[in-house]
Length: 35
Image 1 (spheres, rainbow, N blue to C red):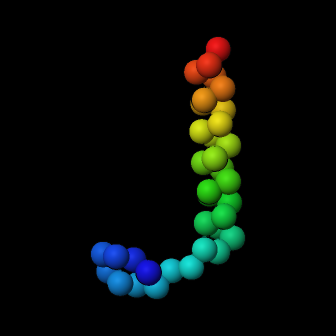
Image 2: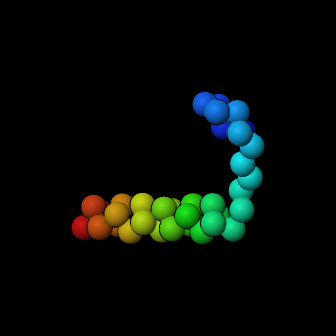
């Protein structure tokens, strides 16, 4: 539930894909920063 508008949202497939994308991106950025 959104704390601003109180609208109900759920973790659908788009949400899971975006979380996975962000996790991969952060891992790649972390690896690049370690070089």
